[in-house]
Length: 198
Image 1: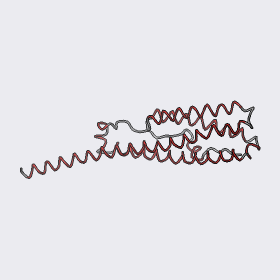
Image 2: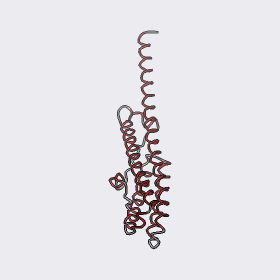
Image 3: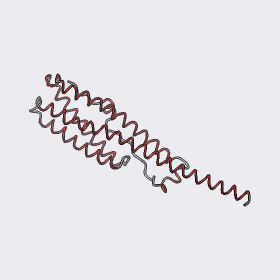
Image 4: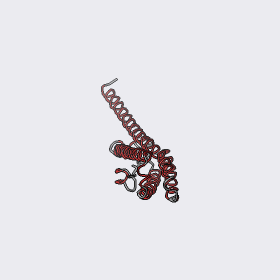
Protein backbone atom coordinates (compact mmCIF):
# COMPACT_ATOMS: atom_id res chain seq x y z
CA UNK A 1 0.00 0.00 0.00
CA UNK A 2 1.46 3.33 -1.01
CA UNK A 3 1.75 6.42 1.17
CA UNK A 4 -0.75 8.29 -0.99
CA UNK A 5 -3.31 5.50 -0.43
CA UNK A 6 -2.75 5.67 3.33
CA UNK A 7 -3.11 9.47 3.31
CA UNK A 8 -6.28 9.21 1.23
CA UNK A 9 -7.78 6.63 3.59
CA UNK A 10 -6.83 8.77 6.59
CA UNK A 11 -8.49 11.82 5.03
CA UNK A 12 -11.64 9.85 4.23
CA UNK A 13 -11.74 8.46 7.78
CA UNK A 14 -11.26 11.96 9.22
CA UNK A 15 -14.08 13.29 7.03
CA UNK A 16 -16.40 10.45 8.08
CA UNK A 17 -15.67 11.08 11.76
CA UNK A 18 -16.23 14.81 11.26
CA UNK A 19 -19.63 14.19 9.62
CA UNK A 20 -20.53 11.82 12.45
CA UNK A 21 -19.63 14.53 14.99
CA UNK A 22 -21.91 17.00 13.18
CA UNK A 23 -24.76 14.48 13.31
CA UNK A 24 -24.18 13.80 17.01
CA UNK A 25 -24.07 17.52 17.81
CA UNK A 26 -27.40 18.14 16.07
CA UNK A 27 -29.01 15.23 17.92
CA UNK A 28 -27.60 16.46 21.24
CA UNK A 29 -28.89 19.99 20.68
CA UNK A 30 -32.33 18.78 19.58
CA UNK A 31 -32.58 16.59 22.68
CA UNK A 32 -31.49 19.54 24.82
CA UNK A 33 -34.28 21.83 23.61
CA UNK A 34 -36.84 19.02 23.89
CA UNK A 35 -35.74 18.44 27.48
CA UNK A 36 -35.94 22.17 28.14
CA UNK A 37 -39.53 22.14 26.90
CA UNK A 38 -40.28 19.26 29.26
CA UNK A 39 -39.27 21.57 32.12
CA UNK A 40 -41.74 24.20 30.89
CA UNK A 41 -44.38 21.49 30.72
CA UNK A 42 -43.77 20.51 34.35
CA UNK A 43 -44.13 24.09 35.57
CA UNK A 44 -47.19 24.87 33.45
CA UNK A 45 -48.92 21.70 34.64
CA UNK A 46 -48.23 22.79 38.22
CA UNK A 47 -49.69 26.19 37.42
CA UNK A 48 -52.75 24.63 35.79
CA UNK A 49 -53.25 22.42 38.85
CA UNK A 50 -53.14 25.43 41.19
CA UNK A 51 -55.71 27.50 39.29
CA UNK A 52 -58.77 25.32 40.09
CA UNK A 53 -57.78 25.47 43.78
CA UNK A 54 -57.59 29.25 43.56
CA UNK A 55 -61.01 29.43 41.88
CA UNK A 56 -62.52 27.03 44.41
CA UNK A 57 -61.20 29.11 47.30
CA UNK A 58 -62.50 32.31 45.72
CA UNK A 59 -65.89 30.78 44.89
CA UNK A 60 -67.25 31.16 48.40
CA UNK A 61 -66.45 34.88 48.41
CA UNK A 62 -67.26 35.61 44.77
CA UNK A 63 -70.56 33.77 44.38
CA UNK A 64 -72.04 36.48 42.16
CA UNK A 65 -68.89 36.67 39.99
CA UNK A 66 -69.61 33.35 38.33
CA UNK A 67 -68.75 34.56 34.80
CA UNK A 68 -65.26 35.60 35.89
CA UNK A 69 -64.61 32.26 37.58
CA UNK A 70 -65.92 30.30 34.59
CA UNK A 71 -63.74 32.36 32.24
CA UNK A 72 -60.66 31.47 34.29
CA UNK A 73 -61.47 27.75 34.20
CA UNK A 74 -62.23 27.85 30.45
CA UNK A 75 -58.96 29.67 29.78
CA UNK A 76 -57.09 27.19 31.98
CA UNK A 77 -58.59 24.26 30.06
CA UNK A 78 -57.61 25.90 26.76
CA UNK A 79 -54.06 26.35 28.04
CA UNK A 80 -53.91 22.68 29.06
CA UNK A 81 -54.95 21.74 25.52
CA UNK A 82 -52.31 24.08 24.07
CA UNK A 83 -49.66 22.55 26.30
CA UNK A 84 -50.58 19.03 25.19
CA UNK A 85 -50.24 20.02 21.53
CA UNK A 86 -46.91 21.72 22.18
CA UNK A 87 -45.59 18.81 24.24
CA UNK A 88 -46.30 16.48 21.32
CA UNK A 89 -44.06 18.60 19.06
CA UNK A 90 -41.72 20.88 21.06
CA UNK A 91 -40.27 23.56 18.83
CA UNK A 92 -42.97 23.27 16.15
CA UNK A 93 -44.02 26.79 15.11
CA UNK A 94 -47.78 26.09 15.10
CA UNK A 95 -47.69 24.28 18.44
CA UNK A 96 -45.69 27.07 20.05
CA UNK A 97 -48.10 29.70 18.65
CA UNK A 98 -51.13 27.76 19.94
CA UNK A 99 -49.61 27.47 23.41
CA UNK A 100 -48.63 31.15 23.45
CA UNK A 101 -52.16 32.18 22.44
CA UNK A 102 -53.74 29.96 25.09
CA UNK A 103 -51.37 31.34 27.73
CA UNK A 104 -52.32 34.88 26.69
CA UNK A 105 -56.01 34.12 27.18
CA UNK A 106 -55.27 32.55 30.56
CA UNK A 107 -53.23 35.55 31.68
CA UNK A 108 -56.08 37.87 30.65
CA UNK A 109 -58.63 35.79 32.57
CA UNK A 110 -56.37 35.68 35.63
CA UNK A 111 -55.95 39.45 35.41
CA UNK A 112 -59.73 39.94 35.41
CA UNK A 113 -59.99 37.60 38.41
CA UNK A 114 -57.31 39.58 40.25
CA UNK A 115 -59.16 42.85 39.65
CA UNK A 116 -62.41 41.29 40.85
CA UNK A 117 -60.81 39.89 44.01
CA UNK A 118 -59.44 43.30 44.98
CA UNK A 119 -62.95 44.26 46.09
CA UNK A 120 -63.12 41.44 48.68
CA UNK A 121 -60.94 42.14 51.75
CA UNK A 122 -62.02 38.92 53.49
CA UNK A 123 -60.82 36.90 50.53
CA UNK A 124 -57.52 38.79 50.48
CA UNK A 125 -57.00 37.97 54.16
CA UNK A 126 -57.72 34.25 53.77
CA UNK A 127 -54.66 32.16 54.72
CA UNK A 128 -55.50 29.58 52.07
CA UNK A 129 -55.74 32.28 49.40
CA UNK A 130 -52.43 33.81 50.48
CA UNK A 131 -50.74 30.41 50.26
CA UNK A 132 -52.20 29.74 46.80
CA UNK A 133 -51.12 33.18 45.66
CA UNK A 134 -47.56 32.58 46.84
CA UNK A 135 -47.43 29.18 45.11
CA UNK A 136 -48.76 30.67 41.86
CA UNK A 137 -46.24 33.49 41.99
CA UNK A 138 -43.39 31.05 42.60
CA UNK A 139 -44.59 28.85 39.75
CA UNK A 140 -44.81 31.84 37.40
CA UNK A 141 -41.16 32.59 38.13
CA UNK A 142 -40.22 28.98 37.40
CA UNK A 143 -42.17 29.12 34.12
CA UNK A 144 -40.24 32.22 33.10
CA UNK A 145 -36.87 30.60 33.86
CA UNK A 146 -37.83 27.35 32.10
CA UNK A 147 -39.08 29.27 29.06
CA UNK A 148 -35.81 31.20 28.89
CA UNK A 149 -33.79 27.96 29.06
CA UNK A 150 -35.95 26.46 26.30
CA UNK A 151 -35.58 29.52 24.07
CA UNK A 152 -31.80 29.51 24.62
CA UNK A 153 -31.62 25.80 23.69
CA UNK A 154 -33.73 26.43 20.57
CA UNK A 155 -31.45 29.28 19.53
CA UNK A 156 -28.35 27.12 20.04
CA UNK A 157 -29.89 24.29 18.00
CA UNK A 158 -30.97 26.59 15.16
CA UNK A 159 -27.61 28.37 15.09
CA UNK A 160 -25.70 25.09 14.98
CA UNK A 161 -27.77 23.57 12.16
CA UNK A 162 -27.67 26.77 10.12
CA UNK A 163 -23.89 27.14 10.46
CA UNK A 164 -21.40 25.89 7.96
CA UNK A 165 -20.67 22.96 7.47
CA UNK A 166 -23.65 21.54 9.41
CA UNK A 167 -26.04 23.29 7.03
CA UNK A 168 -24.79 20.98 4.26
CA UNK A 169 -25.85 17.86 6.17
CA UNK A 170 -28.69 18.95 8.48
CA UNK A 171 -31.58 18.21 6.11
CA UNK A 172 -30.23 14.79 5.20
CA UNK A 173 -29.86 14.01 8.92
CA UNK A 174 -33.54 14.82 9.56
CA UNK A 175 -33.00 18.36 10.85
CA UNK A 176 -34.63 20.32 8.03
CA UNK A 177 -37.00 22.53 10.08
CA UNK A 178 -35.90 25.20 12.52
CA UNK A 179 -37.25 24.90 16.05
CA UNK A 180 -39.47 27.77 17.21
CA UNK A 181 -39.02 29.48 20.56
CA UNK A 182 -41.93 29.94 22.94
CA UNK A 183 -42.88 33.61 22.98
CA UNK A 184 -45.84 34.73 25.01
CA UNK A 185 -47.85 37.67 23.71
CA UNK A 186 -46.93 39.72 26.75
CA UNK A 187 -43.48 38.43 27.67
CA UNK A 188 -42.88 41.20 30.20
CA UNK A 189 -46.05 40.28 32.06
CA UNK A 190 -45.24 36.59 32.27
CA UNK A 191 -41.69 37.30 33.44
CA UNK A 192 -42.99 39.66 36.11
CA UNK A 193 -45.46 36.97 37.21
CA UNK A 194 -49.11 37.93 37.36
CA UNK A 195 -49.95 39.44 40.69
CA UNK A 196 -52.77 37.92 42.68
CA UNK A 197 -52.83 40.45 45.47
CA UNK A 198 -55.03 40.14 48.52
